[in-house]
Image (cartoon, rainbow, N blue to C red):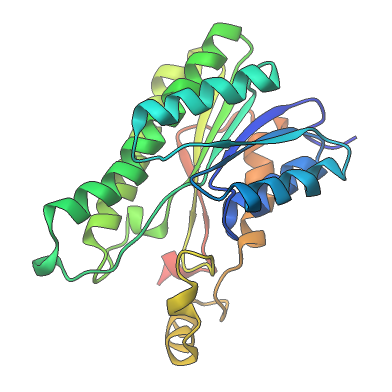
Length: 253
């Protein structure tokens, strides 16, 4: 039996080749049934669902734009209804742009903060409501970033959104702990995903970034899977309000 046998999980951000997809597959291998969120990539999400079904677990794709909190909340409720409840939320949906601070527009900041912070808030709050109503506890996990604590040129708006997620989950942990719901984050540094592949595809840029990471390489989506499974299973039952840094040592620099 896997560590998540019988659990019901919603994983967001699975419509692209990134951390959400890798974690969803990892959860399924550990025995969980998976609701797969995507923004507008039904073919990709359905392909992940078929891959999960091949493991013997149930999987179904659900669409929502994280910049629309009402749509995000509806997606969480629909996913929980299909699963028959919700034990785990892994929120990996997000966005990033790279713009000098003096050139940032209100619209760009509102979009990044809207998706990363407000979308994560709406998703986590709705999932927590489902868990609280069931009275059996649960796991709320989100992918944050090393930028929740570490500044980065061209990413002040992105760092602000991730810093907000850190404080959001810390505060959630205080209120939801008595309900048996844990709230934890995973903070990677540079990881190659569809969001940044156009930049990471440049060999010179990739070498510069890798040189800043003590373990000497850029991360891959599958590097997040072990931490996500740990935070989702019983082995982490006495952990809440904290962050696992899966960053190749970048945070120590």
